[in-house]
Amino acid sequence: MHRKPPYDCAQMSLPSTFDHAADFNPADDFDAFLRRIPARWVVYLLADAQDQPVQLLCVRNLRASLKRRLGSDQAVGPSRRINYRDLIRRIHWQRVDSAFEADWLYYEAARRLFPQSYQGMIGFRSAWFLHVDPDAEFPRYIKTIDLSPRPGVFVGPLEDKHAAARLIETIEDLFDLCRFYNILLQSPRGKACAYKEMGKCPAPCDGSISLPQYRRLIQWSLDTLINPQPSFQEQQPRLQDAAASMQFESAAKIKAYAAQLEQLGKGALRHVRPLSDFRYVSLQRGPREQSAKLLAITPGRIELLAGLIAGPDKSPELLDLIQRHNAAASDVVDSVGAERIGIVSHHLFAPKQASGVFLCTQDLTASALAKAWKDLQKQKNQDDSDDEGLLKELQAM
Image 1 (cartoon, rainbow, N blue to C red):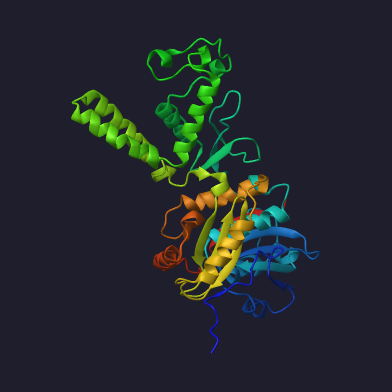
Image 2: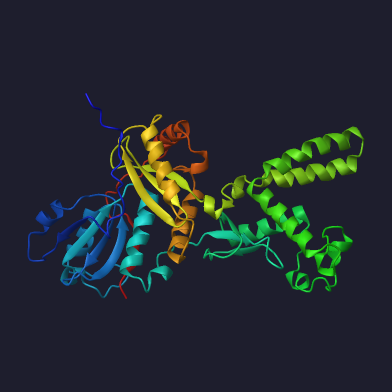
């Protein structure tokens, strides 16, 4: 007997906006109308007689939400002047099963339906990255949310602009980089600051080292930021030699330096990687118990690849699907792509109890995917609500 694979690899993707709809007529039997509506977690749209958007919402119980908004002549919502029962004639919705999926689909719907106003109203934060171009005439690290293509490398994401600023300070301290860019721009005729006197800057500004040498220093710092382990491991024999030679002051400095290096790639910096490597597979809750949705995340894109109906134990077909999708994805990020990265970044830094599981595709193996499935099943299930359970609300201007 031919067994159906434990997932549907029909390359599911986001519909144009929604995949269900129902007409509403206030003269009809309202209870009969509600019985056709699922009491489920959805992103949904209220539309008027011309099918024009009126209000976009994300709620935990669509039936309860429509009962509240359409069940009487009382005005509800952010504007008490709107009587939805008189205005609304059609409801569009899409079922969601996790907070990540809800945020993603709500964003996509808001962007398409309210292109002029959605950015200031949906409440998603931008993802912060560092950018540096080691080949620039006067290279430096900057923090940014603008991921549009340019020479150099973006590394991130970081949780917020403060974390990005702290990381720049850490890199400057570790590699004795120039702290005052306005003085660096005067190289080689700049006046060195106090960091040169303290031995904490090689002073490319006054020509103590050449700009080509400084660019190589910037490149070394970038390589270490991306992969800190080799530099960290190099400190161990240095530390042992200093201790063996009873050079305790040197040993203390090496130990402190190694401790700073060890923090790279951990804690708040655990997701820092080049933007081109911003590639994840995410397992999120499915519509039934012991089911899941598998999403592919690449720079600027989120796509639903498969619906899993059983654990993905050592499934070569599933891994092949992920790898083929990943290989075909572009690294170019536009403004919309940057906003999607912000949504993913928010969930990467969210508590693990209910945010799904994210695996960097560089670390993806059959066993890692199987473990991700088990970790997902341990997470707290966000059940549908008995009341409306309003999560997000965006009204047409």
